Image (cartoon, rainbow, N blue to C red; front, side, top):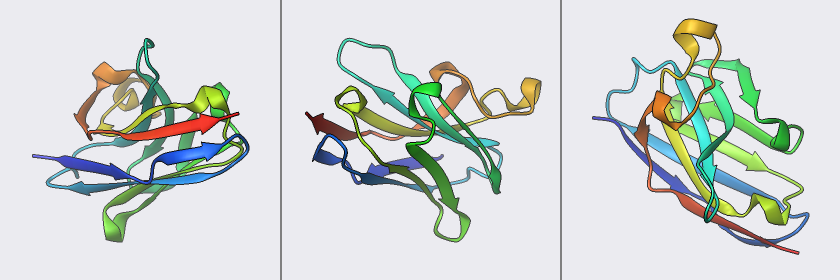
Length: 130
């Protein structure tokens, strides 16, 4: 069983930065992809950043966060990270990390929606004030 635990959320002003972490435990080596999703009140959960497991060069981002969000992983620490800079009020959401195969086996890239990821953390809240 795979367990994910996020941390690092908080309340910041517009233009600020945050670093989110997600510690992974359990047998997740069969998963091809790790991802960060977010869900704002009244909105659907959306993927914002994806990374291929054990391949730091293969990352993908939603257009809305390109240039501001950076996903990375430390395999030795079993930890996934999301560095967020230049935060905007519209980034306010509950942020989740997830693991799964995503779209890997039919596009050779990590992407996809929530239904394509098997394992989820409880989320960490990010609130950005203007």
